[in-house]
Length: 218
Image 1: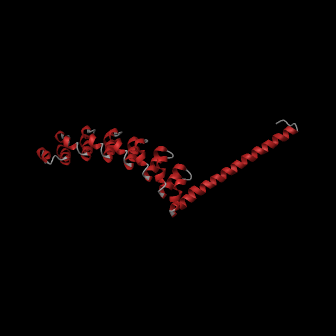
Image 2: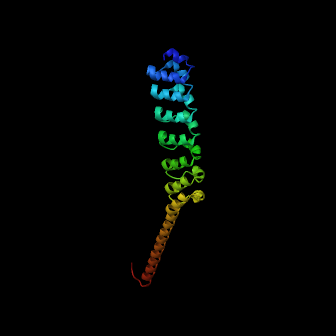
Image 3: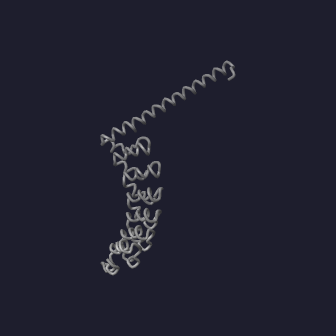
């Protein structure tokens, strides 16, 4: 394929990219306008040819959640603000963007994340290090992630999810054994400790009273 053929190929982003990659083994400026109209090939052109930003293609990339994420990860190696709105509409790409690009919370994507039980659980575990209230309604509809959420996030009962857990024999047994029974044991232990403290306090009061009555200095 020569340059003329590449330009004649229906003004094709695919052929322009392949011409740059396989023939020129570098930048193909004449093909950049057509490449910039395609999110897939704009991303590939930036990653494989320019090995840096392809600003001409960023508008079209920013309209696609998947390629916005990959462009941020592989090309920019950091935030791609133009693409954050479209990323935030997807639970999957919002979670991966938070995890592998931002390495922190992605608040703009939390509504989308909250619609996926799996993403909500992992987001709570890895970034919030605690409750993710926005995602609890969704989690509560999934026995597996309700159990995981109780075990790893709440470290105790997840009452919202107990109804769905009760309908799954496997997770119901795990929940009973590792969450419900364990919590009851903790409560019993606390009660015993509380009773012990009360008894020690009562004994101390008695001792002080006796000493006072008999004029014994403590």
